[in-house]
Amino acid sequence: MKNLKKMAEALIFIFLLASNLIYAQDKVISYNQLPKTAKTFLAIHFKGIPAGSVIEDRELFGVDKYKVHLGNGMKVDFDSGGNWKEVDGEHQKLPYGFIPALIKTYVAKNFPNTNIVKIEKERWSYKAELSNGVDLEFDKNGNFKRIDD
Image (cartoon, rainbow, N blue to C red; front, side, top):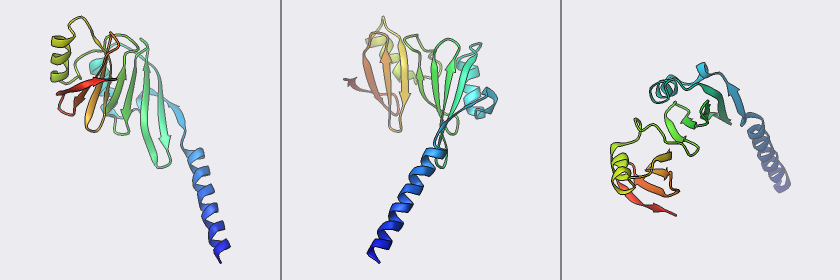
């Protein structure tokens, strides 16, 4: 009986692993297949910059995120609902329209000759990378927390 239970557990584990390998994959999609929220974000903040490629990152139970590579080299990641998670300027200045005001103000005041080149929105914080290589961390409201090592 113990051997039967162990075999059943092993089969379930193998099935789940195989299912994840089959269904969890990246898929190239068209720009029009992005959620409306993501398309609106791109239209407002990256107006006139075409999407080079759009990748749907699928997990076992659905879409995990969308990765958009823009024609100017920048990358934008969206969650499954189309809300931005990360914008990577690839060492280029990001458009500041979507960045919280407190973050923009802090950077302008404390790092006047730099630009934000990458920003990541996490559940409880923001992380911003500056053009001089400094990484900053802010709370979910945009208040400075620390310089990230």
